[in-house]
Length: 287
Image (cartoon, rainbow, N blue to C red; front, side, top):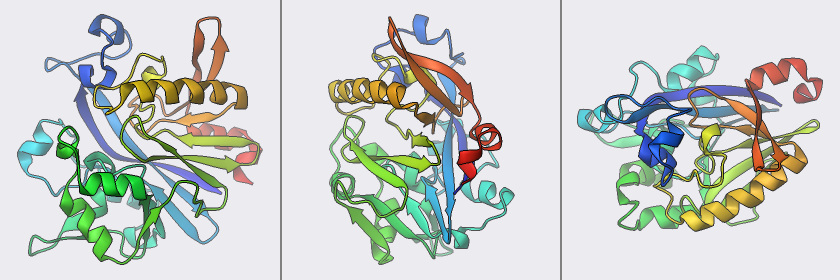
């Protein structure tokens, strides 16, 4: 099994959105806000090479929206999932599976593009698409709070492709990857737990989007059920500390991975590292 982190987008988000009820005087100790109160974040996808399968987790924003849409996200030009794949030596046609943690635009938008007639079509023409049925149903009939994050032109081409797989909770279509459902951020978010050698790599999605979101109260304001997020996070972090999980962050612009430890003040980040550094220094990762 081989892991290749891929940057799909570098962009910015309002610091208050990223950390919810936590005051700026606290979160600004780790994140410098600009004149718009925005902090730097990224969309870090993960390509898993497993025998003949090339599994891509999430895809980034894409480019189907208008200029105003991207301008308010302060997206860095020239960065995309396709460019990152190319730099790693792969093309969209090589991908056999695309696994979506959930269907918010910054996670699924780049899975489709507009053709010369302005119609949205699938980018990964040879891939099967995977998402939880709970999240799919939630996204197809969105609530008013999340409606601005779900777009039909992201979803309908996936359905029309005939390659969309809707997963019930407990279904496990990949060897060595356990998919678990978390519901605080959005209904039916999939978090992959990837077993490799003696290690478990957890792709954090929007469950714990950055290392700074590890403290229990640091819950993004966009989570639809923050109390559920709190309960899910507390239980997960206890487990992560006990089992020595590697947390792989999708949205942390600075820290790619970390482990956590238990202290008298609760579970905290222990140390940060690049996944590739761990791959090179820990033999079981390349088993």
